[in-house]
Amino acid sequence: MNKQHNCDVLIIGSGAAGLTLALHLAKNSDVVVLSKALVNAGSTFFAQGGIAAVFDENDSIAAHVNDTLIAGAGLCDQEVVQYTAENARACLEWLIGQGVDFDQEEDANGELRYHLTREGGHSHRRILHSADATGQAIQTTLVDQVKNHSRIRIFERYNAVDLVCEPIDNTQTTEKKCIGAYIWNRNNERVERIFAKKTILATGGASKVYQYTSNPDVASGDGIAMAWRAGCRVANMEFNQFHPTCLFHPDAGNFLLTEALRGEGAILRRPDGSRFMPSFDERAELAPRDIVARAIDFEMKRLGADCMYLDISHKSAEFIKQHFPNIYEKTKSLGIDMTKQPMPVVPAAHYTCGGVMINKQSRTDIDNLYAIGEVAYTGLHGANRMASNSLLECLVFARAAALDIEQNIDHQELVKDLPAWDESRVINSDEEVVIQHNWHELRLFMWDYVGIVRTTKRLERALHRVELLQKEMDDYYQNFRVSNNLLELRNLVQVAELIIRCAMERKESRGLHYTLDHPELSETATATVLVPKS
Image (cartoon, rainbow, N blue to C red; front, side, top):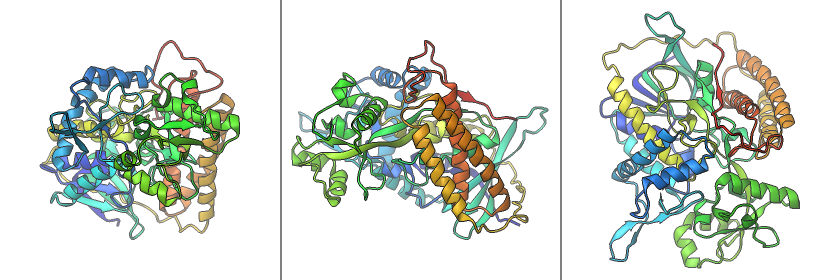
């Protein structure tokens, strides 16, 4: 019999969204936080830029809302944008209360105030940050708080395999509720069960589906795939944000060069040193990310160049080292002195704007199942996420979920035994090479066919390939014991299909979805919603 754990609340994911929710709920509930790798391995830790909120007296919530709507290319949910902007400052003040140390500066009267930077799409300086390692400051602070809380347990190195659902009592409908999940203990390679009265997906995005990504290895779309298999709708999966400026160096890994560099005056240049962004958009380097990424991609293909260059060397060395210490040290270790020379850059898959559909309380289509953070589709980002709204979304919707769960959780509910995990008819795999081959093929054709610029034929080819991979993965999954690579590839193949299907349904170019076959904008803006078969 598989081991069963029990809790009030199961949070699958240990980034800013999941840990924020855990701290909100642990006052009255026993919480388990599931972390696929070590607790700091998610995307939050690597976020450089910051969090958007109105702290400047010259700024306004209306301006934040308007900037977000413009960046979203007409596809944002205006009520959600308004709700998020209105709650931004309170959520940031909660984070500051937890101990996050945002950068400060002296004003004209010698009093300290938060240093606010500006990024693409923003009309004002409204980005709170901790140097150029904001995510690290947030993640380490929240982890410290969570580890010291007596009612929160962290399960490190545990993969969620699938959600466990059952029909809602006393109904004749097909509606169901989530009662927990099957989880794979990577430490002893055993599948276990966990019962929970409320389950929350906080698993992040799916950028690992692409060959080049700024994301850590854990960003494999697990929550989106699990929710889809359980019966949840997903939306807007065609909108994958490609960060314009990933460092192009064989030893750089997936190192990101924050948008705050361009906010502080960095210029994009061709290999010959000439500037090109003013030719693409009047906002130049401060245009939204989709425009900047397409411009870089266009110039690279036009010139046959491996990369473009990001140059902030016209600023003083003191300024650069003060505002971007981590980037300075990283590039210096690779032989690039950003105070004296430009940095080579390429676009890379960065953020999943679509996801599991939720309401304003973070509820999914399945009772007792919530989704928060990048895994969720809230309507905030529309067709393109504005810089530094992502960590904000994590905080705002974690709090919204917490309020709803606190009002609706039944602490008297009895623990249920979940169905046992049956692996009596599977064996250990002796063909791991199959997974590795499929893994590389998937990421390569997604980059080539479903990348920054798309066509109908490319999408058709991608769908054909992904359907073949799905058949292979289903056969493999039924015959062999689970492993980390198998679970992640199974989820990535599913998410790839959802991305392709959404992209094929959108017969226009809007925001992050750009297709040569439909370059114009449709008169009406509608979300792309996929409904799973019953």
